[in-house]
Length: 257
Image 1 (cartoon, one colour):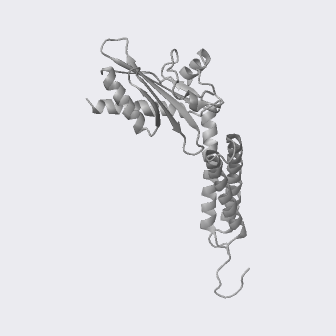
Image 2: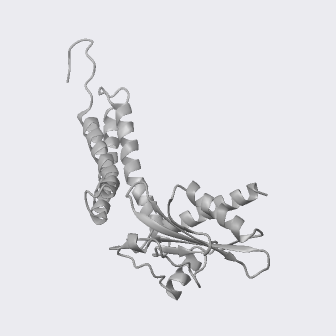
Image 3: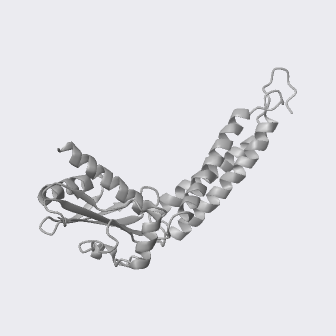
């Protein structure tokens, strides 16, 4: 304790410890994803680092809570606001992966989403890019289709009252606007193939779009399929991608009317 007259009260050591733990936990969580993305380690190692970071964040939050009590106004120690900062960082570091894990557990454990489970668009141009991928390019069949229909009942083909050529051009522009890497354009077949890489862990997923005449006259049907190269469950990533693309395409087509 500093007894010198006018001297500032020292910062609680518990608060300093909480700040250090929170910083390390947050750094581990960030490094877990980017280390995987930059090929520093396998994705399984990245998930393990993320888990340790999350538990470290929870521990930091606990220490920060003690520090906040010890450094509360009038307690003779400084660092109350720093303790609150460490508490916020620690809780956020734990909460984000925890929420993601809970969301993933509530979703189907599948990694292949399509608007046409009965006759999904087939990959062709991206096949060489999938060499060595843990997940095969073929569709999983009725079992996967049943899980998708149960978990994502809203995903369905887009039918538009547009000529096929116009619909194809709009589909291609919408794919580019999504920020995807266009791998193949085959307007005669009505096929577009692309890849998309997730920001944090750098997982590359493959996409194929099919634009064909609908059963109804003067209408065009647009189907899309998005599939992960690794992992049994995609935690809803492919479904979210399909939904986002269909919304963008609908908005674009409406804007052209």
